[in-house]
Length: 335
Ligand code: ATP
Ligand code: LTN
Image 1 (tube, protein in one colour):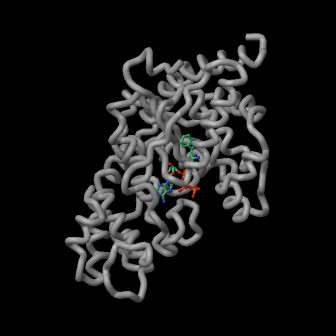
Image 2 (image 1 turned 120 degrees about the horizontal axis):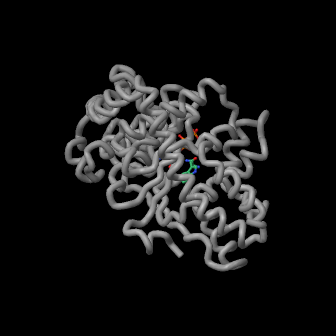
Image 3 (image 1 turned 180 degrees about the vertical axis):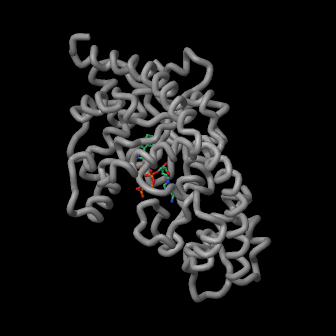
């Protein structure tokens, strides 16, 4: 039974990997939606460091990035008192449930995951088993908390479908144990594209630094990256898939203003690419300025951040243990 039936608010869970510099793709596609949803839901926002080590990470850097991402969650507007904000590795139940769910997931299902195919083709020297079972850990993250809604970018859709399948399979094998979660996709920010390769998604692991705008990029860096963004030779601003570079810039603009593409086109129709880029750069700088200011205050206060991590991890662990005990009992472990 959903815990949300007993409590007042439905529950959401989501996470970002501390595996690089988070981008405006993560911000508009994930974080900003979370901020808008936080009051209506009981929310857990996780920094998924266990997922991050599926690719090689430098230990000191991973530690710093994890704390940095916790601070960015708060700087972007998430309340660390009313929401549960914590690093995944602090709650051991994630790994425990993940093992159990591995035994309820078929290799045929994992073989179909496009993110695995994508990441393994880019990391041929390190195609480890964690990269392969990554979606099972993600399912464990979500199912541990009896999550109702999972706000994600559309690149995670396939993983969420697998999560639902695993939950249903487990529920059918035993009896109702997990809430079967629904995905939630934001309107405009669902898929921001790379500035250099506007048919591919903007990603924090992009090898080309000009492809992605990091949340902590300085204003002149943001402006320069947008100036260099790939457009086309049409020379006319239209919102169409035939002009993916221009379309992406309009999307980024709309993420800031909340306008529809149609509304934004009233402003851009008949203008040149230079004008579009200038407007997009100004909008982005303005959006990120307050987030950056708050971030630099927070990151100085390690004690405060560590306290947030400790209390929130304890809260998460308490909720997670309830589900895990139920699961262990159903599969036949002595509890
Ligand atoms: P990596 O490049 O390391 O794989 P990533 O940039 O894809 O990372 P994740 O940590 O995998 O980031 O994703 C965190 C969240 O941000 C997810 O909900 C994902 O769907 C969303 N997201 C990532 N990139 C984009 C994007 N370009 N547009 C919209 N949402 C995105
Ligand atoms: N796999 C996701 C990050 C992630 C996540 C989750 C998102 C891990 N666990 C649980 C939502 C819910 C990604 O790569 N973006």
